[in-house]
Length: 254
Image (cartoon, rainbow, N blue to C red; front, top):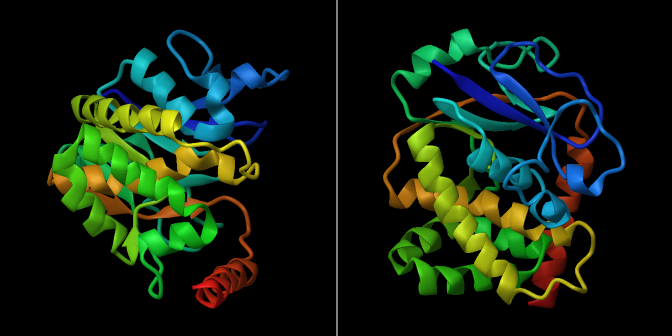
């Protein structure tokens, strides 16, 4: 079973040693540094759009240039795991651990993130721009109207799979990439991001996160969720405070 999980990175970092992992320098076309990893600016690529597509430039490169039975995406600081214990004890999932799961499932996803007091739609528009998702719905209406019901359902959920992380069987992966990039490229034509902040300008990576669940829902994909680990300490107090602040401010404005 030939499994390749891209590890998207833009800087030097520790990488898992298992041969299933392929470190990829994303946005390589925009960098003066060569990290010594596989670059996403070879062959058919969108590396120079990394500031707007984030790790999806690596995903596009893999779609167009990588041959494997299963292809996945993780991040230098965030990995799938099956090891129990604290994050410090956990290790990225190995090929040996994945094979039994991939014999049963075509798609592996990270455990959902839960918002509880927000839907996927309201969480996004309180953090970014409402126009991003409204234009995405318009693109779906024009290109894939059969996905509209799934889109609206997913946007009304209070949880979702995030980070653009997954592992997929190659034919499923090809179908997904064909669909999601056709939407994002059309959205790019319609959306004016000239006044966006550096963070909000990463819009197509953010929207791609939300579209994954839409595609999963519409196509009734049977998937397996497994845990993920963050390789650095997270300030949950700061994150939670920022989340509540956005919620309170949005209520004041409405």
